[in-house]
Length: 100
Image (cartoon, rainbow, N blue to C red; front, side):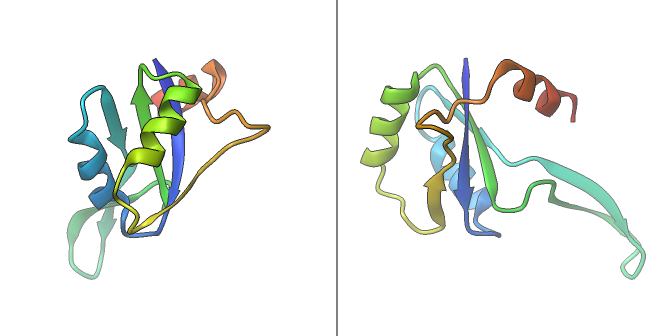
């Protein structure tokens, strides 16, 4: 299972997750944090990493790049995070995220 990170416009995380999750073999999510609002006296959710969407898939790097290029959604999507042409998260990074 490979993990990828997409950089998106803030407040478009949930819309893009819903769109991506309609595809078979893709699980997209945006990490959320529950906090208490004293002014409204309620618990609410906010993004732990605003502007980022995490994608879990069986696709390798080339397959995911090609799949992402073919998608028609452009509103809210900015780019795929990459370092030295590799965007899949490493095992250590995945372990940190799963603890959160």
